[in-house]
Image 1: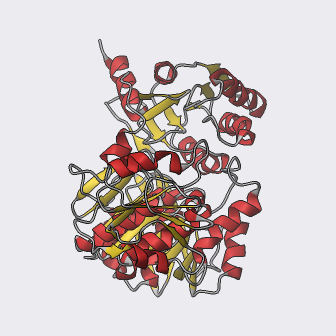
Image 2 (image 1 turned 180 degrees about the vertical axis):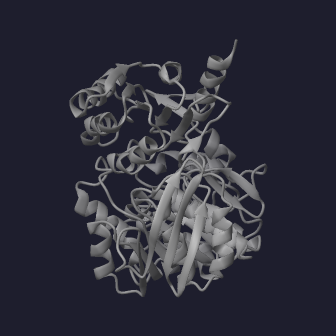
Length: 514
């Protein structure tokens, strides 16, 4: 396995070789005007003569003319890197304390101030775009990809911002996180505007909302897919998790809402929002837009769309019943903006796959094999029944749990897999700083208690995948779950290249070799 440096993706972003989401030029703004834009509570320590042409919160990525945002971090404060930022051309610092290296704008909460400030510095780019923000526990990425496909098919120049990729007219790059940091997001939107983009489909995570990354961005449509237990290592409870998601739909941030009402949180949100809204559902005709005649097989997913003055048969190439919900979300959002739905739906129907989302791997083996991102029990309960429906044979599931995340969902991940699979193979995902053996045992304990499945523990992920493939026979199903598109595995600060899709393909080819 090849070891990769932690900062590689960060260093690729916004450099001379990657211009996907960096504006070529931004009008300079006098530092004193920057201070005034922050209001009376902002204090300038040092000279205000500098001209600011950009803003960045990663000292490694600062360019000449940037304002460096030195934020409090989990382990170190950003002011510790002010000298590095200065060496790269920073002209001033935004922080909650004086840095002593450069003129400093001191505010009480620099993280909260940063999004609106970055938007102002880059000319309020979201004001020139139709930004579609997708939030929820499951389905964000697929919904964003469906939105992007629909917009493009309808003749709209579209950009895409997801946890997988950032893609605009000038190309694409690998995403660093689900929702970009505030500076990165505003730079991206400014670049998209400069490059002729008219609309952007983007994922909005609860972290992005709670940490104010999307502040300063105006969303023409906010989408809510669903809410289930996840990220309780970050949010204290489900109510706090829901409250973070609901921030997207504040009237000053969002013009229109498209809300899935198939769970209690969606119904709560639909009742609470004060902006115009459309509801969607795959289970109830009470929604503005709903589906009937739902069918999913190994070739795709079909349903009848009803609502928004439409009754239309839809056949997606994407696999799984859950893709009906994602398509309804995208269709609702596009209907709210008056996009040509016939053209948009045709574009969605032509979307072949979303990376790492029930992605089939086929080298001619006599059974089905998939990689999927399902990393919570709600995702498992959506996908495993579909996988079971594809076979009269056996289902083999490779599962694990990520370290430094909600420990309360580890045993349930194993238990839910054991309810549906015939064999559960417990392995490592990314333990981070946690003990990998303890993580495996937590998942295996749940699997042993959760059903009648055979439970195997195979620590090495490649070996676990090879084990599943070796056990499968004609007509069976293998699913490698939990990591999806993620190309890197992390153990205690050490990162190695590991892509489940590559590993599964290699295992299948090895099995097929004479």
